[in-house]
Length: 96
Image (tube, rainbow, N blue to C red; front, side, top):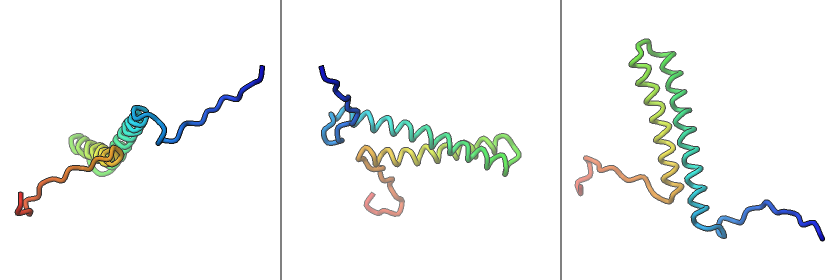
């Protein structure tokens, strides 16, 4: 009997089933969403502690930071899934 080395390399993305590729995209998206929301919330909370005295102002700034992180992650996830961020109607556009 001969010893066979176990290969741990993955197949290139073009040879993987679509389900695995989709799972990887979702994993990256969830990771990105959690990280950016937490980092945005921490940045907002830090700024709120330094700049504001009232609890409601601090909470609002921390929530804004978290929302900014969430929005940034949403935009990147939209690009990753080959979608585009929908265009919002403009009041200046006469065709709408």
